[in-house]
Every structure is written in C-alpha cells, then in structure tokens.
Amino acid sequence: MKRAGKRGSLMAAENRVWKLMIAPSLLLLILMSIYPMVFNVYNSFFDWNFASSQPRRFVGLENFQGVLTDQNFLRAMLNTLLLVASAVTLEFLLGFLIALLFHQSVAGTRLFRSLMIAPTMITPIVASLMWLLMYNSDYGVVRYLLQCIGIQSPPALLASKTLAMPAVILVDVWQWTPFVMLILLAGLTSMPRDVIEAAQVDGANSRQRFFSIVLPSLRPVVAVALLMRVMDTFKFFEVVYMLTKGGPGNVTETVSYFAYKEGFSFFEVGRSSASCLVILFVVLTVCQLLNHLIADEWEV
Image (cartoon, rainbow, N blue to C red; front, side, top):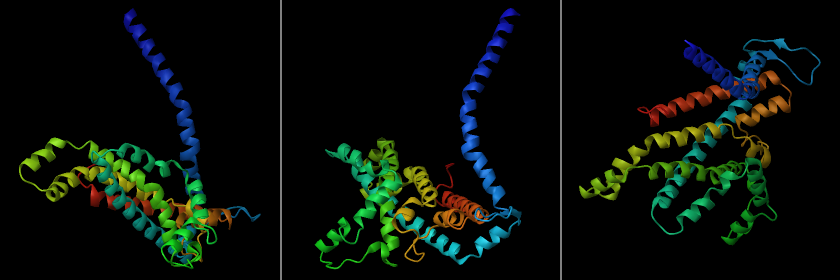
C-alpha cells in the first residue's frame, strides 16, 4: 500500500512537472497563433476603420461580399495563382534536375550542395533588396548581363507590365529551388538501391527504371515538397513589397499585398480580415486538390 501510494504521488508530481514545462509554449501558441486567428475572424464581420472615429459596426458577411466582388482583389488572386503555378513548377523541375545531379557519386557534389542552399538561408527581405539592386536600370548586374548578350538598351524590368511578374517570379525561384532540391535529394538518398539494381539485372533501361521505380517511390516526397511550396508561395509578400509595391499598375499585386494595403494603407480592418480568410480558404482548397492529385494513397 505504501509503495502504491508513493508511486501515485510520484506520478502526480511528474504530471505537474510536465504541465509546468509545457505551459510557456502553450501560452505562446495561444498569444501568437490562436488569438490572432480568432480576432481576425471576429473583425471580418465588422466595419472598422482605424482612421475613423466611428465605432466598429457589425455588418455580417458584407466584407466578404465586398472583397469577392472587388476587381482589384480578383486581379490580385489571378496574379497569385499565376505566381504559384509558375514559381512552384519551375522550382520543382529545377530542384528535381539538381537533386538527380547531386545524387550521382561525383567529386565536389558535397561542396556545391552546401553552396546551393545559401539562398534559402537568406531572409526574403534581404533577398529582395539584393535583387532590387541587381535589377537597377542604371547600374544593375542584370542590365550588364543583358548588354553582354547583345541587348544594348535593356528595359527596366520592374517598370515593365510584361516583365515585372517574370522578374518577381525569378527571385522566388532563385531562393526556394534549393529547398525543393534538398527534399527531393533526401528522398532519392533514402530510396532502396537493391530494387533499382534488381530491375537493372532484369534488363530495365534507365528510362524504365526512372518512371517505374524512382518516380513512384518519390511520390510522397514530391507531395510534401509541392504542398509546402504552394502554401508558402500563397503568402508571397516581401518580394512584392520591396521590388514593385504591386506595380506597375497592379500586375504584380498578390492577395497578401492586397490584404496588407486594405489594413495598413486604407485602414479597413474588416475588409483586410475578410480577404485573409478568403485567402485561407483558397489555400486549403488548392492544397486539398493537390493532395488528392499527387498523393491520394498516402497521408501527407
């Protein structure tokens, strides 16, 4: 009985200890994630302008209706979908090719692999500032390179309605292709080589081995890489803010930048909150569709 009592008191003490240990993290999660999310949902049902002395007014779904019928928001959503499709596709294709190259046992691959991940370690604001200087129409490196290949009067990329979006996409591709490469390289490295060797012994050529063994084995890894990049690219804000401010016109304005302008330029907190929730719904829908298309038999 005494042993059972001691064991029970010891377990109770251990329970108190782990509760005390987890309390700071739980409090931080509530303050930094859960509370802002709930407050954002609450604000989306009110007409609230920071610049006005009028008190907030409950308007129901009026903010959502206003956002979904706003041509600027619809254009920003179209720009974002174009950005996500273009950037993620390029990052996946380039990352896959580089991962296949680094997977080969070639001298120097470890050094180049370490150098490749350098862009990923840079914060988006710093990366945007670097590319802003490189895109400079007077002394930028990009202007010099274009002149070297025969274009004597290169256009100002960030001021061109046709070239501004590709210039913005290039920054994202440059920074996040190494991230995709690392995920795919990890999948290639963990792949059992005996299966590939057995297929080679059975007479399968390199093309058959790649499409019949390598790609199916990498399917869950590909799903993880694409889902992570799609979710992150929908939040694309820093590069647009630093490089173009959504211009020229609104050809590079994304939904994240639209929500930022509504809240911090026009002080329309309700519309900004509603647009954020619409973005969340679109992201969840796209990711769910992507999950079914790429990894329908795996839980990702």
